Length: 294
Ligand code: 0GY
Image (cartoon, rainbow, N blue to C red):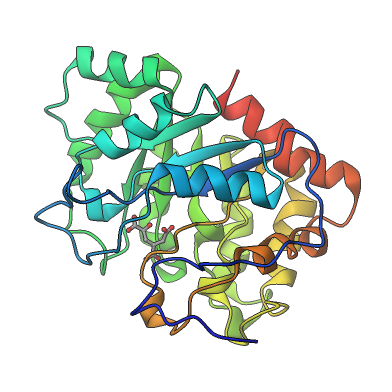
């Protein structure tokens, strides 16, 4: 297998065609657009500078992989400037929804315009290598502002931080969607207290959902990512009506991992974590449609 160097490519230039065929209407519920930087500049406070990954490339990948829709999540390299995201939503013919990043100074008119464009949530990021700290009161205020729109909050954090963050998450007045299963350390195994805490968090809070995404970030062994499968499969089987799946294209920060993932191989993980057609349909169609297109 030829490994693509992340210093040269932001995303895989020629991903393999997956063997798994997604059901009609399948949603890639975690992906991003980057730039293009000369039209939509990257944020001054960004922690990394990606190569451009524009909407046309995302929509072409969607079709190539056999998906129908996207949920585009604001990436930290664009900060609170959601223009690239909104531009992609407007160009999608209703086939994309968005999750934005906003500050407390956002106006109701701006929120309403984003809602009309297809934004359905805000993202709160707690991963220290990606963002500076935001006081909880500010996030509480934002959550109170977006709740009446029927939006939800997407949260991104490292497994070891859940204990400290949990009281804040349970105080939120909306659905809460956790990115990448709360980033378990797969070398520790599914019985580790950190992952058991995450499962209990989902069990005790029916408004909490999980993306069973990003094996390429969590894996120690690398493709075909079998070391991540027990984690994702556990979450899918226990919380079948509250799970989402996404490619994470165009894969920010893969310099840390050292290669650019082949999106086709990521799609081929799906039948291992959702082994029946019923689970696949819930994961890829019913759940994202309920959360983003209701
Ligand atoms: C992801 C993961 C990462 C980056 C971001 O917004 C971002 O910059 O989310 C990461 O570096 O783990 O979900 O895209």
